[in-house]
Image (cartoon, rainbow, N blue to C red; front, side, top):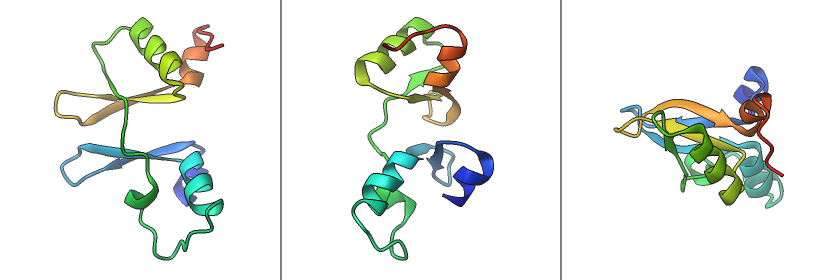
Length: 104
Protein backbone atom coordinates (compact mmCIF):
# COMPACT_ATOMS: atom_id res chain seq x y z
CA UNK A 1 0.00 0.00 0.00
CA UNK A 2 2.97 2.30 0.61
CA UNK A 3 3.89 2.17 -3.08
CA UNK A 4 0.30 2.89 -4.10
CA UNK A 5 0.30 6.00 -1.92
CA UNK A 6 3.83 6.98 -2.96
CA UNK A 7 3.03 6.77 -6.68
CA UNK A 8 -0.59 7.97 -6.28
CA UNK A 9 -2.07 4.95 -8.06
CA UNK A 10 -5.11 2.76 -7.37
CA UNK A 11 -3.48 -0.50 -8.41
CA UNK A 12 -0.13 -2.19 -8.89
CA UNK A 13 0.68 -5.03 -11.28
CA UNK A 14 2.06 -8.28 -9.87
CA UNK A 15 4.78 -9.48 -12.23
CA UNK A 16 6.74 -12.74 -11.90
CA UNK A 17 10.53 -13.07 -12.37
CA UNK A 18 10.04 -13.53 -16.13
CA UNK A 19 8.01 -10.35 -16.44
CA UNK A 20 4.70 -12.16 -16.91
CA UNK A 21 1.61 -10.49 -15.47
CA UNK A 22 0.17 -12.63 -12.67
CA UNK A 23 -2.34 -10.25 -11.13
CA UNK A 24 -3.28 -6.76 -10.00
CA UNK A 25 -3.32 -5.49 -6.44
CA UNK A 26 -6.00 -2.84 -6.00
CA UNK A 27 -7.19 -0.66 -3.14
CA UNK A 28 -10.41 -2.66 -3.29
CA UNK A 29 -8.44 -5.89 -2.76
CA UNK A 30 -6.79 -4.37 0.30
CA UNK A 31 -10.04 -3.06 1.76
CA UNK A 32 -12.14 -6.19 1.16
CA UNK A 33 -9.54 -8.88 1.78
CA UNK A 34 -7.47 -7.27 4.53
CA UNK A 35 -9.23 -4.41 6.31
CA UNK A 36 -12.81 -5.68 6.16
CA UNK A 37 -11.89 -9.29 6.88
CA UNK A 38 -9.42 -8.22 9.60
CA UNK A 39 -6.74 -10.53 8.18
CA UNK A 40 -3.32 -10.78 9.79
CA UNK A 41 -1.29 -8.47 7.55
CA UNK A 42 2.01 -9.79 8.87
CA UNK A 43 1.35 -13.17 7.26
CA UNK A 44 -0.24 -12.05 4.00
CA UNK A 45 1.58 -11.88 0.68
CA UNK A 46 0.49 -9.89 -2.35
CA UNK A 47 -0.44 -13.15 -4.10
CA UNK A 48 -2.86 -13.93 -1.27
CA UNK A 49 -5.04 -10.90 -1.94
CA UNK A 50 -4.37 -9.73 -5.51
CA UNK A 51 -6.90 -10.15 -8.27
CA UNK A 52 -5.65 -13.13 -10.30
CA UNK A 53 -8.44 -13.78 -12.79
CA UNK A 54 -7.67 -10.83 -15.04
CA UNK A 55 -9.37 -9.66 -18.18
CA UNK A 56 -6.67 -8.30 -20.46
CA UNK A 57 -6.40 -6.79 -23.92
CA UNK A 58 -3.71 -6.56 -26.59
CA UNK A 59 -2.27 -3.34 -27.95
CA UNK A 60 -3.78 -4.26 -31.33
CA UNK A 61 -7.34 -4.30 -29.90
CA UNK A 62 -9.53 -1.37 -30.84
CA UNK A 63 -10.44 1.23 -28.24
CA UNK A 64 -14.09 0.46 -28.92
CA UNK A 65 -13.56 -3.22 -28.06
CA UNK A 66 -11.76 -2.28 -24.85
CA UNK A 67 -14.56 0.12 -23.87
CA UNK A 68 -17.18 -2.56 -24.54
CA UNK A 69 -15.25 -5.11 -22.47
CA UNK A 70 -14.79 -2.70 -19.59
CA UNK A 71 -18.44 -1.65 -19.64
CA UNK A 72 -19.85 -5.17 -19.99
CA UNK A 73 -17.57 -6.64 -17.31
CA UNK A 74 -17.82 -3.60 -15.00
CA UNK A 75 -14.05 -3.05 -15.00
CA UNK A 76 -12.29 0.12 -13.93
CA UNK A 77 -9.01 -0.91 -15.50
CA UNK A 78 -7.72 -3.41 -18.03
CA UNK A 79 -4.08 -4.46 -18.43
CA UNK A 80 -2.58 -4.41 -21.92
CA UNK A 81 -0.34 -7.44 -22.51
CA UNK A 82 1.76 -8.77 -25.37
CA UNK A 83 1.70 -12.30 -26.83
CA UNK A 84 3.82 -13.59 -23.91
CA UNK A 85 1.42 -12.07 -21.35
CA UNK A 86 3.96 -9.42 -20.38
CA UNK A 87 2.47 -6.14 -19.24
CA UNK A 88 2.91 -3.32 -21.74
CA UNK A 89 0.34 -0.90 -20.34
CA UNK A 90 -2.82 -0.30 -18.36
CA UNK A 91 -6.00 1.39 -19.57
CA UNK A 92 -8.24 2.89 -16.92
CA UNK A 93 -11.72 4.33 -16.95
CA UNK A 94 -10.11 7.70 -16.25
CA UNK A 95 -7.96 7.38 -19.38
CA UNK A 96 -11.07 6.77 -21.43
CA UNK A 97 -12.99 9.56 -19.71
CA UNK A 98 -10.31 11.97 -20.90
CA UNK A 99 -11.36 11.07 -24.43
CA UNK A 100 -15.07 11.48 -23.73
CA UNK A 101 -16.12 7.83 -23.27
CA UNK A 102 -19.04 7.48 -20.88
CA UNK A 103 -19.47 4.27 -18.88
CA UNK A 104 -22.98 5.03 -17.62
